[in-house]
Every structure is written in structure tokens, then in C-alpha cells.
Image 1 (cartoon, helix red, strand yellow):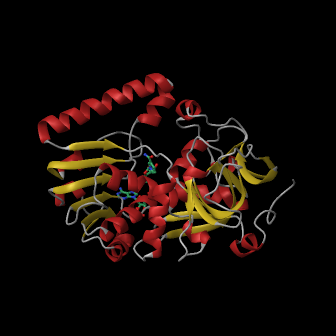
Image 2 (cartoon, rainbow, N blue to C red; image 1 turned 45 degrees about the horizontal axis):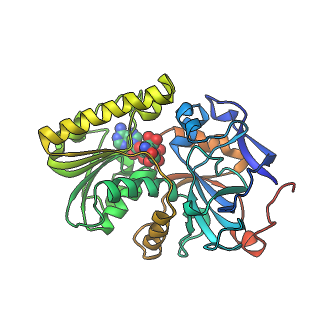
Length: 363
Ligand SMILES: NC(=O)c1ccc[n+]([C@@H]2O[C@H](COP(=O)([O-])OP(=O)(O)OC[C@H]3O[C@@H](n4cnc5c(N)ncnc54)[C@H](OP(=O)(O)O)[C@@H]3O)[C@@H](O)[C@H]2O)c1
């Protein structure tokens, strides 16, 4: 089966190398797979990095496809087909998923994924908004719940570095829902936005350095990739109390795999990780975690209930049609703004009315 999709035929430094085709051939639908007719896809910084070939040796080890390659890690849509062994989903269900960067992605009319990575979408919001949450929501859950355990306690002081972005805005909302006190950073125009989300100590990074005004946080969550890449965690560790937890999305794993190849990159990254984690544990009694995205539908089911309970909402920075995918990626690559850049692909009502055939290209 074919469909309309935004693809690359080779790695592309510039976003305008991404082009829309009408005859992308979908991978086969496995017995445990779900096919989603896509309403919207979110744009994540990792999409732009994958476009450039970043981490490719590692992603290939996980089974990344060759070319043409569809980018995109966030999807919300309507189930349009299910594999023979799938009983949790039916054609016509409203669903969402986070697509790992080693799979054909979500900038397409159809995406096929293992059912275990998919969950029913929240009912309170339209799917075109819901698609802003899965990928960033899953990594926030990995970081703040699975690694820092913040969903089981209350009253911790959490610092979120870069609170206005796709990840940061979700982290603040979840931490507020769990009853924590939040400090965060952003530019001047986003200070009131972070206060509205619930942050109490907001540092405007254009005026102050957070490590000069923040102290003694229980948990520090780093979501800001420095440009050019360097792994200077001293400012974050400076504001973390003894016995606290540092958790970061900014790791050298993909970078080292790109430079050295998958195996040597992983070995060196593992050495860096364990030496730092052991030092932090031995000297400062701290826990130290790197987060690498792993897909998980159960987390998305949990996040859907937060949305439906009014505790989590998507923050949308901008929207583009699929034909303007290059502009969408350029917007994301600017690295500033509130929340998520979105790509609109299908119409929720039309797909609900005819999920198996609406918006479909050639058969
Ligand atoms: N390890 C993983 O598996 C994983 C998964 C997801 C994401 N990530 C990484 O996490 C990072 C964040 O992702 P995202 O989706 O949240 O990106 P994003 O939506 O593009 O967020 C960018 C945000 O960074 C803020 N920012 C820029 N410069 C800043 C500074 N000097 N200090 C504080 N804030 C600053 C911007 O706020 P202003 O507009 O106020 O400047 C903007 O809101 C990316 O590097 C991404 O690659 C890693």
C-alpha cells in the first residue's frame, strides 16, 4: 500500500531536502501491528537530527530503514487496520503513539507500528493537538517518573532546564500535578508562560545564570542541548543538593555513535556514564541518569488520563500542512518558542467517518 509522505532520499543538512511524495510504500503490516491514519504529527529536534544522519550507525543497529526514509516521532490518528493478532484496538479507534527514530516515521498519511507502542488518545482534546504530547511525554515520564520517582512522592523541589520547550512544558505540568515545587529557565517572553504552567522560580536566561541564583534542588532535569554540543553538567550539578537526582536528555550517546560507529560509541558512552554516575554516587550520594527514548504504549495510556483529568495540556507553537514540512523543521531548528511545532496531515472527522480509506493515496 502507498500513501503521501514527507521523505528524505539521503541524509540532508538542510530542511528543504525533505520532500513530499504521493507513493511512499508502507512497510508490511505485521500480525501485532496497528496501522494509523495520521491526523497530525509533532516535530521534535530529533527529527531534524535524524534528517542529518545523526546517530545513524546506532539507529541502524536497532533496525532503522534505509531510504526513502520518513521522519517524525509523534503521531495521533485513527486506527485504519490491525494485524491478525491485535485485539486491543479496532479500526476507527482514536489513538496516539511515539515513534522511535529507528522506524519509518509519522510525517505521512499512514504509519504502521507495534500495538504495544500505541494507546487510546485522550478524549478531551482533538487529535491534531494530542499529537504534540507522545514523544516528549514519554521521555518526561522516563526521566521524572521512572528515573527520579517523582510520581510517587510530593513536595520535592524540581529544576527543569529549558521549561518552555516541547519537553520542558510537559515536565512542569506533570510535576505540578504530582505536587512538586518547580524552578525553570526561559527567555524574557516566556517568563509569564512558565509561571502560568506552575513554575515558582523562573530564571530569565537572558539576564541571569541559573547556577548563580538557584540552589539545593532535589531533582535537576536537563532538557537543553548546548550548541555546539558539549557535555558541561557542572552548572546543573552545582544547583543539586547532596543526595539529589540529576536526570538528563542531553547525552553523548548518539554523537559518539555517529563519530566512532555504534559499538565503539556505545562502549565509550557507557564508560563516561558509569564513571560519572559512580563519582556522583560515591562523593555526593547523588543519583545520575541519562535518558534515551524507549517506546511504551502504557505510558501513553497513563498520559491520556492526565489530559482527560485536565492536568496536562498540549502547548502548540505553530502548525504547518505536510507540504510545508521544511518550514516546520526550520521552525523547530530555531530552538526557541513555546511548546511544539505541528504538521497537520488528515482531518479527524473525515477519518473517523471512513478510517480505512479516507486520505489514502494509491492502493
Ligand atoms: N534523550 C532523548 O531521548 C531525548 C528525547 C527528547 C528530546 N531530547 C532532547 O531534548 C531537548 C529538548 O527537546 P524539546 O522538544 O523540548 O525542544 P524544543 O521544543 O525545541 O525546546 C526548545 C526550548 O529551549 C529553550 N531554550 C533555548 N535556549 C535556552 C537557554 N539558553 N536556556 C533555557 N532555555 C532555552 C527555548 O525557550 P525560549 O524560547 O524561551 O528561548 C525553547 O522553548 C532537545 O535537545 C532534544 O534533542 C532528547
